[in-house]
Image 1 (spheres, rainbow, N blue to C red):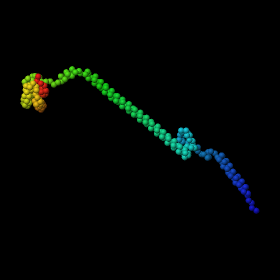
Image 2 (image 1 turned 90 degrees about the vertical axis):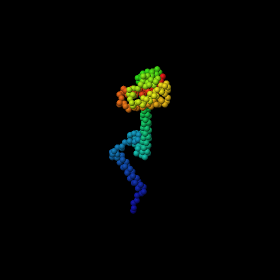
Image 3 (image 1 turned 180 degrees about the horizontal axis):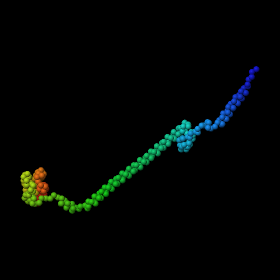
Length: 248
């Protein structure tokens, strides 16, 4: 005779086994010490916007949804860092612009100060020169100065304007000046006869003859003492000036 368990008994036995296993698992979970399941404390979260899950801009991300914890947290963390970098760039750019404007303003002030200093120095220099120059000469002073600096004409004992006779200095009586003396005596005799109207041709001849005599005098400067040399040179230049004046 075979013995068979009814179907209801088998189901009840299986249910008791599952219940026993569940209770055993719960007991194990509740009685296991925390030091055995978590040997080290969880690291703090250094998320975007502050340490320990602090919020930035009112978002308040915690340890469970910070950077690296989830895909969404990583995306939001990277976005926040990009926004923060952009803000720092804008801040640094504005500070650089302010510094540039300040440097430009100071450069303009320096240029204005340099210009003012330059013209002030010129004014002081001109004032000093004016104080050293003394009073400006009047018209009569200019006339007197012109008369004093005008070339002196030959005295009548050196050149007779009536006859044209010339009294030569000692240095010009040398034989090397004989041809020049003869030419000048003839030209000044004609000048005296025409009351000083020498004409352009005779005027040019007087100038050329005087230049020739001066060149010969310069060539013999070592043969003539200083006093006689200066006397002869001044006499010749005086003859050349006399051609510019009338005889009377």
